Amino acid sequence: MQWERDTVLNEVLLKNGFMLDYTLTPRPGFKKNEVFLAKDARKESLLCLDQNLDAATVDTSRRTPSISSSASNWRSTRRRSGT
Image (cartoon, rainbow, N blue to C red):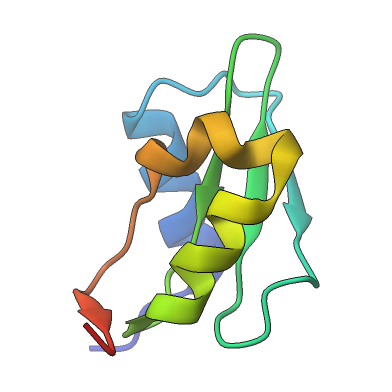
């Protein structure tokens, strides 16, 4: 079964309490995975739908000041790789 990325992103964010007017911004600072910053009026979180989440991606999230408080909100469809 093929899945559509935008449909899954919407579903994950809405099920995790984001408002319908959330914004989704690609985070180019992450080199190993495709990472987005989801943000609405109440909260923000990083989101990655890649099959494997690289350890370097987690390390980058911890070093990024504007999202370091959201690092515990990571959502992924698979387990981290490289650990």
